Length: 492
Image 1 (tube, one colour):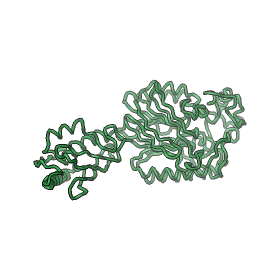
Image 2 (cartoon, rainbow, N blue to C red):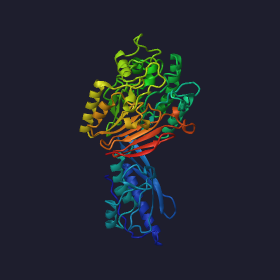
Image 3 (cartoon, helix red, strand yellow):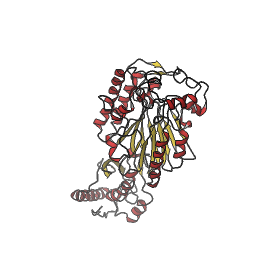
């Protein structure tokens, strides 16, 4: 800041009858500073008293970071001991979003500014508090404020009546999932800082949308909502992760090039292409912003699967006889499961623990993707990045609902073996299970979150189950709605 800070002279506080003289001096100093700042195109705050006595003040401050303008409301009251005692500046909307802030949104001024104020009283005033306390605080904290990403999973929309799931344990509310997505988009659009929405897979129900016409109708209805989000927030990117239901209805070629007459695909979105490592792959990584410390890694958990090429339902449109199924991975899955994987209504009969992962709606990442993942994380370690891993299928047994392992990655041990080698990995988010799961591995420090689906959520929250993920340098906050549990996670 090159603008000159004026010096105040009157040692008069708000309890003194001559306080209006000091107030007049405060106002003159503020006007002089703001006008000079504006002339140099360096103005960054606007503040004014709320009452005639000049004891309560409010205004706005703003700061630029990564080509983004952060505009914040500022409040303070003049204390009775002023000017010997400094004012305390409050930014309520940042309450809890940075460690250098007290409860209620009061910025931390004790260590550096308060001693400086005391040694310069009464020469310091409101303009000094703004420039020497708030200004440096913004410069230090704005880069560490949340990069906001939103989460939704297993929308599985189908234009059909509610039916029971295959295990007859929960009724699936197919039509209401579209309403839930619409409500989620409405909510996210109230937050201009949201720059990423992770669709964790299963955008439609590829099984209940029995024919191609139904599937195309369903994906178009879903994409109307995602496109509304992208149209109204030009800064947001929406990666659609590949899930088993995408593969039940569309081929991998379609999911790469774009499904017929829609913009739906499961490769890197155009809005992320400039800072992603791969543009035409179902697994890729990118930084949230060019100068962000957070990197997002998207996995393809069906690189090895029974239905590797997709385009139909296992045992119905896709069979071994018509070449629709992968013979090797069909054999691997069947050898590890005592039930007929084409006909069984309960894939898990006779299975327990992580053996339950061997069912045809799970899959694996495979050796080629493992090598790529390791190389991405090696570089992330060197660059001191924080990494968020996203996958449709769950990566840790303890993060599956009830630790049942029904929705666990086939080669999860190999993936976890790589993750535990790298200090950059902080968070894993997955879907697939329809019910919530959470596990913090104390040995690695990695937090695993499995997001619930609106499809099987209780009636009262079925249309409000989605979340917002706020990423800080040292912590992550999940703001949950409906069936999503809010979490405040400290990362190390």
